Image 1 (spheres, rainbow, N blue to C red):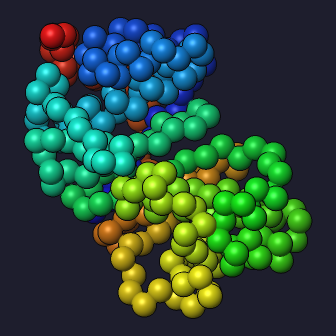
Image 2: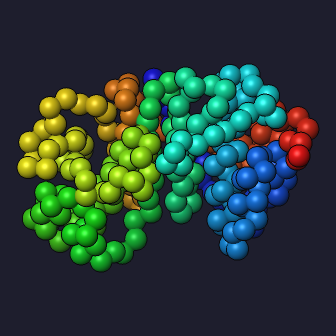
Image 3: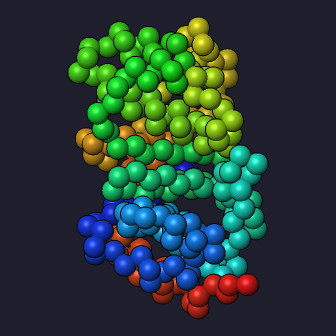
Length: 241
């Protein structure tokens, strides 16, 4: 079954992300240090800390032996554990990780005021038309639900920016999300399954996975407890060569 884990970031001044930097990959450490805002550094650190902690906890792996790689489009995977599929997403106060044995993607977005004319540039015609048919007070909510669903599908496919958002069409009805042909008819065969999750009125979260076995809820992990567990399970710092 797919599992989803979420970390809500507390007030930035209370998060000591530096204490785990030397337990992460060199690439992550350098990327983190390039961020100018502390909030961005925290999100960067928590993402890798979360997946490393889950792998150590569930597969009894040594943190220093974990080797991450990326496919040709930049989607990360664990080089020595091909049957373990995971995907990370973060926005605002949340960092999330979905994990399974089959391909999947997850996306979280913070709902902010948006010029919805952007939908005509990035969404498929059938999706843009659906937004325009809606009452005005529902459009923003629908836009973000659709956005997270489309992003989760691209991440599920592992195609990155090579797959334009308007190259496929999704239909949302009564909380059900499905892939449809551009003309609006259902896709001939479902290659994936979507599920939206509610974490806050200010956020949208959507999972897309090859497996239809979705969890009912997202498992929440306290930020400070995550950092503490990671330090305790990791042992010495990763060697820099």
